[in-house]
Image (cartoon, rainbow, N blue to C red; front, side, top):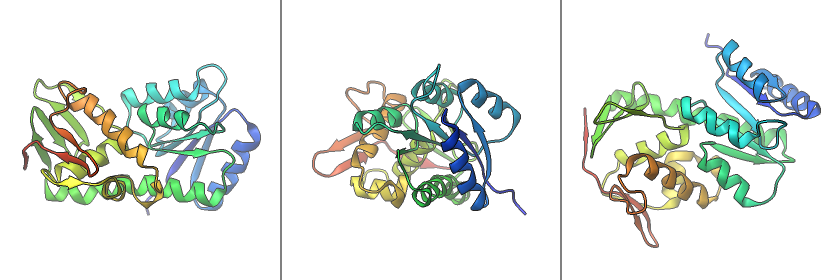
Length: 237
C-alpha cells in the first residue's frame, strides 16, 4: 500500500501548526511542522516531503524568500499561507513559484480540499507520460518522464507544478486559443476558483523561462479578449 502524502507545515505560530497538524492527521496525511526556514530545510533533508504549507510572514527569512529558494532547486508543491488581504501579496507568491495560496483565517475543510487538488494535479500528469515521453518545440524539449524542461544547449530549467501543468496544457493543444477559464480547468483544476490573475501570473512566469524576449513573446501569444495561444509547432515522441 502506498504511503499517505507527507505534508510540511512551516509557520511560526505554534497554535496554527498544532491545529493544522490535527486536522491533516485526522484525514490520513503524515505531517511534519517547522517554525522557521532553518527547521524547514532540516525537515526537507530528513524526509521526502510531498507538499509544503508555507507561511508568508516568518521570523528571519520570510516565506517569499524561502519560496524563491525552494523553487530554484525543487518542484515540491507549495501552498502559501498569508494573513495579508492585499491581492499583491498573493500574486507575488504565485510569481515566485507557489502553486496555490490560502488567506488566513481559513477553514480546515477548504485547506484539505486545496491540498488534495494540488497533489492531484501532480498525479494527473502521469497518464500523459504514456501518450508521449517528450514534447519538442522551438529550442526546447519537455521530458514528461523526468518532468524536466531542457534547452537545446542542455541546460535544464526548473518548473513549478503550476508551470509544468500549464505548459502541458499548451503543448497538448498548440495553435488553439485557450481561454483563462479553460486553462484554469486544464492546468490548475476547479480548486483554483475564479482567480484569473493566477493564470496570467503563471503565463508571465512561463514566458520568462521559455521566450527569448519575454517582453515580446513569440511562443505564448495573448489573444485579446480570448486568452492565450501556443504558436510554436510541437512534435511528440
